Amino acid sequence: MYTSRGFNSLFNHTIKRSMSRIATPTDNPIIESLNGWIKDELKYDYNFYHSDNPLEIIKKYVEYFNNERLAYSLRYKTPIQYRTELRFK
Image 1 (cartoon, rainbow, N blue to C red):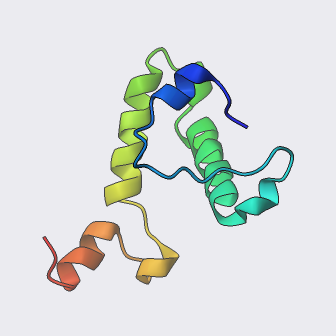
Image 2 (image 1 turned 180 degrees about the vertical axis):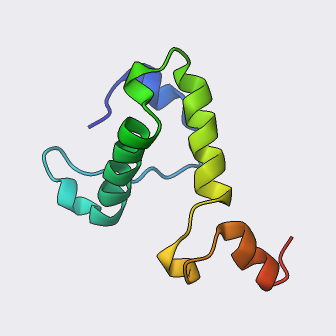
Image 3 (image 1 turned 90 degrees about the vertical axis):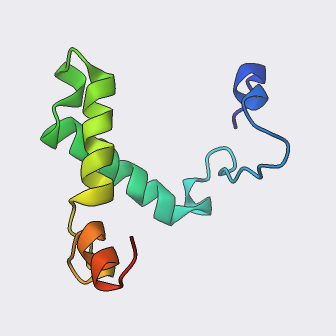
């Protein structure tokens, strides 16, 4: 569990955090799976661990994830294509 005072002080009291209990990653298998997938992509596709500028790698990955990646749940379209077809801005 995240019991660090510094970590906990970053959260506003109106935000409800959802975290797994100690040694029970099955509390939230969907997010655990997504976290593993993101870590693998950063490691293998973006060479994150050998980068001189990890913050830049994260920015590039977030840009890719939010705008360019094909998503099964979006019928294998990018988020931008999907929103455009639905006439969202």
